[in-house]
Image 1: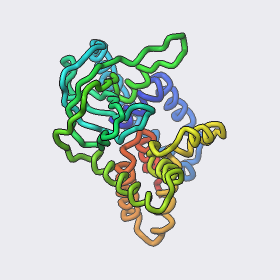
Image 2 (image 1 turned 60 degrees about the horizontal axis):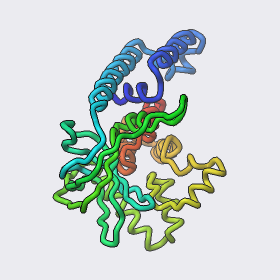
Image 3 (image 1 turned 45 degrees about the vertical axis):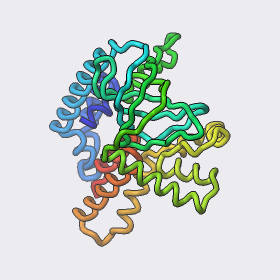
Length: 293
C-alpha cells in the first residue's frame, strides 16, 4: 500500500506505466551480472504488485475525495480530537495536525487545528487527546489556472479542513502510539541540547537532524531559501544514505543477514523519531531496495 501511495501521490498512472515500459525495453541492454538490481526491480511479480497497489491507492483516494466534498464551513460543537504532530508555531497561533473524532457526520478525519497563543497556553504533543470548539474552514482551490491549489495540496497529505479554535482547549487524556513515542524522543533531545546550544543553533540542529522546524526563525529560513539551500533543512534521502553507508562501513565483518536486520531496525527507529515524514519513508523504502550488498 505504501508503494501504491507513493505512485498515486507523485506520479500519474500513465507516467508510472510508461516508467516501467521503459525498464522492460532496456531489459536486454544491460549485462545481468553488472546490473542485477535492475533485473530484480522489473520482475513481472514486482511490476504487477506495484500497479495493483497503485490502482487500490487511486480508488481509496477517489473515495475519500468524494466523501469529503460534503464538508461545509461553519461552527462545530465540542469535539474530541487526538493530536498527531508537534506544535508548529505561527505568529498568533500554534498549529497542529489532529485526528477529529466526529465532524459533520464524518469520523476520524485529519484537520489542521489552530489554537491561539496566550500567556498560559499549553503546548500539546502527539498522542494528547483534547476537547475543542471552533470554526471549520475548507482550504481553497486554485484561483487561477495552474495556480497553487491549497485544497489539493492538503488532501494529498490526508488533511481535509482547517479548524480555528474559538474557545479554551482542555486536555482530557492521552493515547500512547508511535507518534507519541517519536514526539517524546524529539522533545527530550531538544530539552537536553537546549542546555548546551543557543536558540539559533539548536533550531538549526533539530531541523537538519529530525525535521523540527519550529525552532527556526524567519531570518534563518529566508537565508537558506535565498541561497537555494532550503533542502538542507529537510530530512530526506541524504540522511538515509548516511545511515546505511555508516552501518555498512561499521559492520564490515557482520554477516549479510545481520547487517540487513541492523539496517532495518535503524531505519524504523529513524522513521519513528522523524514522525514518519513522507520523504523519509520514501527514502527508507528505496534505500532497502537498492542496498543489496
